[in-house]
Amino acid sequence: MRALGPLSQHSGEDSRGKDWPLPERSPEPVKGLSILLVMLALTGLPAVAQAPATVQVTCAQGAALIVVDHVMVGHAPATLTVAAGPHQIRIALNESYEPWEQTVEVPAGGTVVLDIDLARTSPSLFKEALAAYQKGDAFQAEALFEAALKAPGKKSGDIPFYLGLLDERRKDYGAAEQHYLQFVSTFASSPSGQYRLGLARQMMGQDPLAVTAYKSALTSMAPLATAIMQASGQPTSERIAQLQGAGGDPAAIELAYLHELKGSMVAAREGFRGLVERLAASGKVDLSSPHPAGLPVALPLPEAMRPIPATPGAVVFVSSSDAAAVADAWTKAVRTSAMVGGVSNGWIGLASRVFEHPDSEAAQGALKSLSGRLGTDVVLLSITGDGRSWYFYWQGGRLQDRYCSNPGRMGEVDYKTLRSWSGRPDVIVRICRGTPLSRRGPGYVTITDLNAILYFYYPEMRLTRPAAYRSPVAFMKLMVQLIGVSSLPQQFSAFAAAPGWRKI
Image (cartoon, rainbow, N blue to C red):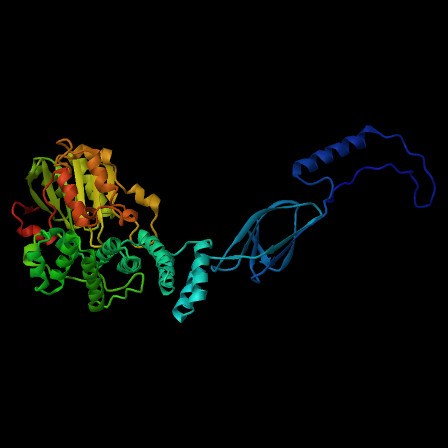
């Protein structure tokens, strides 16, 4: 249907050139025209035809895909005919470039020219930078790493590590320290990041901070080293002399730690650094790689250290004095074998393989069902094999609080997720029946006690929190102390021989 143009007056001259008098208008044709105009308006057809509008698209990267109002219309370069008005236009090439998208107002009868230069994505720049670094082109690699930090898209957490290595080559140790700090704030358990941070600080003459970094690297490589350092005695000259003549890595770890306690920071620094480098060589750990393979490196424990729970473990504690009721509720809730212990300060311990992965659906379902059936408090305390500490607190079948020392695992830290797992001292303090951390405070556990553990255990604060909170074992020992439950067993298989525990 053609749009009607405006009515105009005319003389009435016909094809023969004669003038004919205009007849007097009757109301009927006018009425019919009005109805037609109303119908056109209702159908959305314009009463007056508009001139077409055009959009000219070019892309510096070549034949990029053009999408107009969510419809693919072709590839650049192209000239598009569109209706006048706003249009959502998207220009996309491939995963190496960030798509360009914008709402463009196109005037009637006009032309909009879009000359697009797509931005590179951070992952593509990082890949190119890594290739340049591996070829030895330090200048090009640094420029690309820096560009990757500013480019759109998901940024690799490894970029600061490689920038730190390039800073080391230039002997700019201050810049290297900052880059390594940025790296370990995301990958706190990377021995490479902690080791390189220690080197940079050592070159800057910051021996105490270098010792801290080397110790963190050692703990990441050999989890048992933490237990040895925590169990070391007083830094007496006799003990140091005894360890110097003992030989072996366990003795060397304790010796370096005693040097630190004595204040001999140079000796401690060299001791911890030598241990890290020796373990790296024996375990074929590449300390120039951000995430080296072959971890952790196992260290033998001295006989006196074996009771320390340095291996992963998980125990559920139920606020009850009726072990039979707990066993019955577990049998009905979960068809999996378990070990149940005796009563300790109003808590009954329960261990099962289902809690080896505390954040799994099976573990969560078991906790919810057990708490709901008993209508009481249920607490899971766990150390997983990847060096993380966990707790979950259920009450009457409802999850009240949860904590994980690093829910993001290896990868970029999502701080929103991290804080959602940070634990709530005002909730967990209600079930604490143990001994407060400070003897100077009141005789009961306070929120301050819990704050000291939970908020100092954030991975991004790993370098600044007290040494007592750097180990998941130490963290769990303190939680056990505050809640007032029995000690955390080493592993599931140890329960069979543990006194006071029986299988259900």
